[in-house]
Length: 289
Image (cartoon, rainbow, N blue to C red; front, side):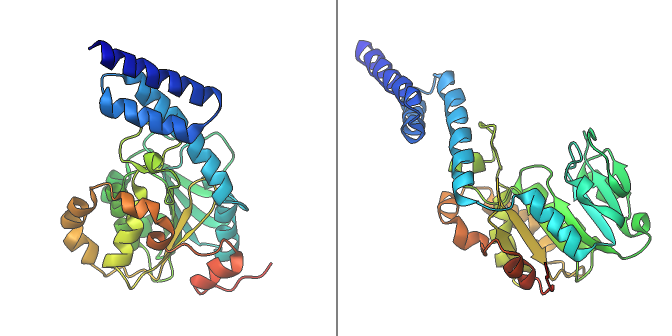
């Protein structure tokens, strides 16, 4: 017992030195070692979450230079000029505010608190996305089949995001463009289903390999943009029932963590250059400065 306590004290001392020297990768490994060998140490989980957050932000800044995801959202609004726009997960309204007149906008969030001015004619719904799609007809809300663009930034779980996409596709049309946030993990811990770090994507990223596998008819790619990537999905087919018919089996299969896909994210997420020409060219839309 004494040897075990001495071993733990030694690892904790190494961890303290790693944190003091800002050696985040060593600190992460030491935290993991503590949790494996001494699972009764709750402080190790807290420290691991803090370390993962710092590593995640640092890695994102290194790997995603250039425009951030809100700047890309603004560019999509400017280029696509959506007649109808839907946003799931509006929080304080910063991204919803990127929609401008004459767009008609719909915002859905069970706990939104708008902290900025909105610039499009906007309808807000304080409810979950599942409840929203059950209770409301988007075409009636917008006054026609004009849902040209949607942004999904709700729960950070792949199964909920998959349901949100399926509902948007059903209410959209072939030219509808769907954007999905928190899709490009750069630190495995931040891409876990359970949250232990402040910088957290959840397992939303699994949506991309699912769509590429089960719906090859869709155009699906990822923009490497700070802080957590932005997926772009187009060429929708509102009549498709493939995802609905296989939903339970897909969720059961992809509920595992799939670390190997995080480590090879670029291949599984179909990452393309973060340039307007590449991005808008990939969805067949002309772009000019």
